[in-house]
Length: 280
Image 1 (tube, rainbow, N blue to C red):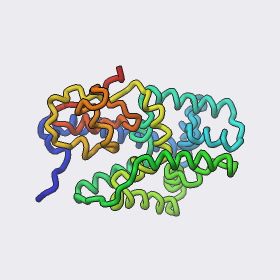
Image 2 (image 1 turned 90 degrees about the vertical axis):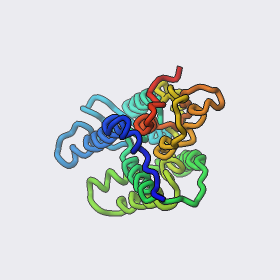
Image 3 (image 1 turned 30 degrees about the horizontal axis):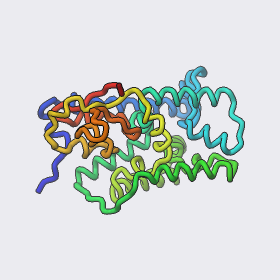
């Protein structure tokens, strides 16, 4: 039997553009952000200086990764006003749009894990290893505990985002081995293994996500035909069911902080069950 390819029915009913609108916008966002970081070192056009951990845009807008800032404080380092303001700006922004939106709209590693998920669906690969998605919170706690014990921002030593950025700037090296390992782990071992089960950055960003205003709503859930396409493409499929089936609060709004607001369920649904909305 040929494996069902999620999205074919949506393309037939809605057309290619509407069936991939949010995916296309995410790719533009991710690649634009990555390009802005690379333009300075590679072309001498310094729109953004720094890295995903801490940057300055147009010499005016500071942005600091909250996990980096938190580790630095726990390690006993003194953060300047610019770094603290940058962390506050990032925290407030993702409090509004959803913490895990960073994972789907900004993080370059998402390009790698999405590619692994797409290939896995195409090859109809079955994953046999179970993995609890709370592991990422234990890993986050461990990283934060290491900061005061070592006096260092330990996560930056192994952060795949930082490693990927260095690899693009300085060429082939250990960084590409780390990226390849994440791709193969997601493809062959655990579906969405890195983003959905291990990444401590996503774990931290999920916390403001529980309070964020921007939400996906199953506005027409009575139209659902149980085709399961949304579950197939969702990076956090466990967040869909309570809203879609009226479980728990009965609200059609996806309230989980682990929803990445990627919009793939909106794209992929041939019945237009989902839409972006707000939590109230």
